[in-house]
Image (tube, rainbow, N blue to C red; front, side, top):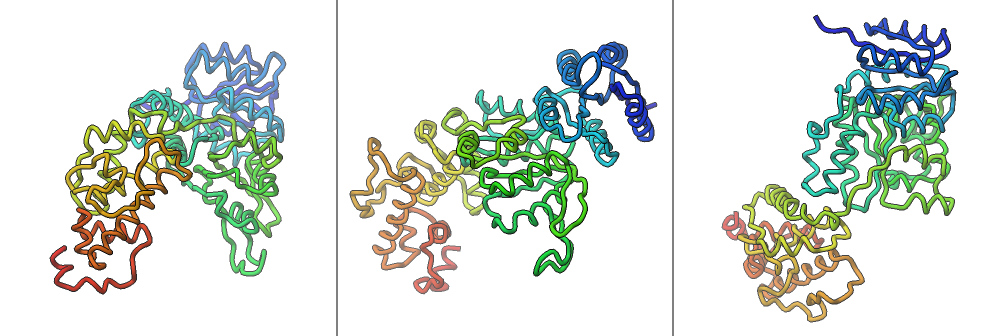
Length: 466
């Protein structure tokens, strides 16, 4: 016989306790109740619980006191805190203290049920080793810390702010938090806040009613509605204009949205994860980002390490990225020499993993098909192509552009040089470069050098290359 789930309700108001008990019992959950913090501590010692619902203000203490006590002595027990209406400060404090979620008075059954259901889906304990974070490649200390944080964050409904440089894996971390949470069965909706025109932001976020504006021929849900029951990832949240920041703050606090052209609000159950590579603290000081929204989004912060801060992970990342590139191109995978692995482990990579992939992609295009050497990464004149001297690599030279752009420019020059030597015959140019015909065509397209027609290639040549 399956043991019945139990919940502890802590509130000094009798009518609130009775309402919560009735709701939970209809969900086939056994309930116990306490009128204060000390009574709750006594009941916690008597039996295990699957969930605790606690009021914030009580005669002998606060909900925060109980959250802290449970975090210390009953690890793994999810706690939802009930706060006064629109008391954003209390809600944020509760989430920072380790509360699973919060509810605002007057309590809506539409908001209560999802909180209970999500809490009951959580495993009894947080176990980082069982968290599915295999996509985070590496065993370095910084990446192990990130894995541990993801395991903890997956057990909460608290808003998460992910900081880090471009290309450091912020969206991947957001996906993993969602994937390992009780919301995993819901949608993960990612939106780049900087890619939405300002005049369309409200309708994109909250949806619109038919006739709300010219072209609104039918009702359309927004991203909040699409993500209800799941996670909404706001990438580059720093790009939101101030007017939209106000509307977003209200939607997060009230857990309700109003469609453009609508007359009533509808409840949405969305977890917010946000990210940006910009410094939000500096933007607040400059008046470009609202302080109240910042503290609402930044309840818990996860900082993604730069690639240069975990050099021991770079060789493994390079190997896996090379496998991915070769599989996509349908070619055999060359070996990355040990000297090359040591070399790339010492690079700074301002573009992080994204830049590493770009550099490997160019090296793949220029290698001999068997091995990736340091010269392939630097794109040096291994085939004695006439690369201008001003483009030669000087390790002591301070570049005014990123390494990625610098190498791309050299690659373009090398390919153009080879095509000139081969009278624009791509098959011959590919041989000069020591790459396959397919690889050359791919690189021409990637670098924006391809023409619409390949007049120099006859059918026989193509068949020979195929």
